[in-house]
Each structure stands twice: as C-alpha cells, then as structure tokens.
Length: 139
View 1 (cartoon, one colour):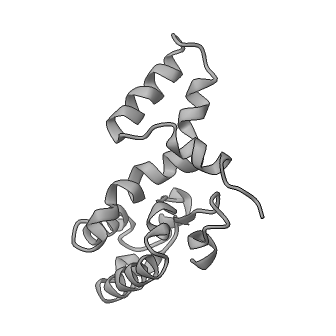
View 2 (view 1 turned 30 degrees about the horizontal axis):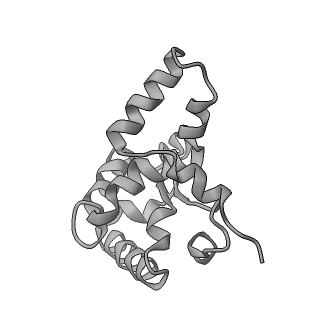
View 3 (view 1 turned 90 degrees about the horizontal axis):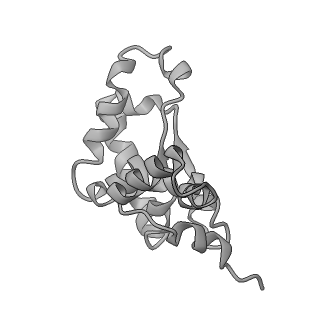
C-alpha cells in the first residue's frame, strides 16, 4: 500500500482483484478499517490509486464468489469509504488505463472514441489524469 500512496510513484495503483477476506463479514470490516487508516496516512493519495478488479477466473474458486462485488459495494457504501466509491469502482481504473489519452489518439468519429468519451463524461473523468502522470517533476 505504501508504494501506491507514495507521491513519487504516480503510476502505481493498488488493484483488489483477489481478496477473499472481503467475503467474511468480520475480516471485511478489518479490511475496511485498515484501508481507511492507510488512506488517511497518505493524506488521501491512496484513495486515488485503489482499483476494483475481479480476476474472474480466480474468484470462481471461492465459495460465495457471487457475493464478491456486493461485499466491496457494501464497504464503499458507508462512511468513510463512501467518499472513494466512484474512484475505486471506475475513475481510478480509467486513470490507470489512461482512457482520455487513448480516446484522443483516435479519429473524432471513431466509435471507440465516441464511447469512451461518453463514459468519461458520465464519470466526470477528463484529461487531468493523463496530465498528472506527465507533469511530475524529477529532482
């Protein structure tokens, strides 16, 4: 978690694709508490670097894997993590994939570009993600 929260590593993200603790209610709360503690310790930076993922082929091995998304949705629906839900489930993934820059390289009428821009507008995600990773100054 520390590497993802480090301001010197703006392109490092922390993806939760296979985290079976989330399916156990007691361990789920411990996970939520730990994540919040780490977000606070990073002055919020970690909240911009956490990403939901399914690793669908791995979670199918878990009992109750159908509840995987629901369990994450539950912890991100309540304070204090609710403030990071949009980022965790969509915006940070779009930033990681650099979707605005990808779309910008395509022709204006390209259906892929049109679709990505529509999704980005829905998420209120713009080129700021692309610029953030490009404007970091080195010492």
